[in-house]
Amino acid sequence: MATHVITGAGSGIGAQVARRLLDRGDTLYLLARNAGRAKELAEQFEGAHTLVGDLGEPERLSWAFGHQTLPDSVDSLLHIAGFVELGTVGETTPKLWNATLAANLVAPAELTRLFLPQLRQAAGHVVFLNSGAGLRANPEWGAYAASKHGLKALADALRAEEAGNRVRVTSVYPGRTATPMQEKVHRQEGKEYDEGRFIPVDAVATTVLTALDLPRGAEVTDLSVRPGG
Image 1 (tube, one colour):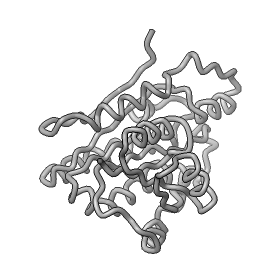
Image 2 (spheres, helix red, strand yellow):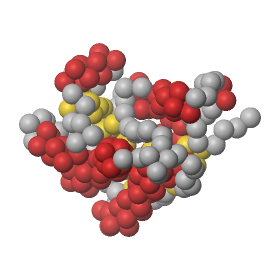
Image 3 (cartoon, rainbow, N blue to C red):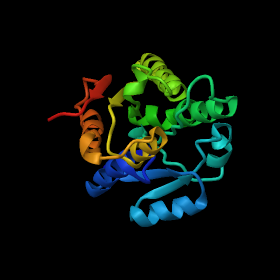
Image 4 (cartoon, rainbow, N blue to C red):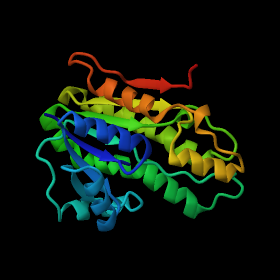
């Protein structure tokens, strides 16, 4: 039975990954931004543990975890939560830049730092749910794409640094996926949302689990997921 720490388990891809891991008997620690959200996650995923820490304030995560009981060993740390607000470079303020980078890049870096001892103990696996925006940047996606390009750099550096500790690192780059975040993006773009046009959530969850379940002696470093027929 493996132990997983998951961000973004409340909906979309994170919820699907959490459900499938819980159903196969694994132990879950789900990160929530506050106590109220932690209660909701505990009700949604019966038997899972919760941890409270706001990804929007990564500098406070160490303090928050110092007042909670963490797992002794972590088989996987799954960074699935994300934040997006569209805007041109000309209209994106420092406040929005900082909020985007904090949630999508600094918080994953800090969470990884805090859980590295447990990951090393288990020869564990860190999975970064990146985005197609981590490989290319389109108009009005500058802040989000910059955060995701940075996340790729974080993953690549971590992989090289922790190879001697047998910690595996995988980046997953989904295209547009049928999630609540995608629906929000369509509202910002002023477009009608049709989930049938996008990658099913379960397909991305399966990609994440495939990387996790790869036998020892091999490592998937980068996986791109695109809509198919």
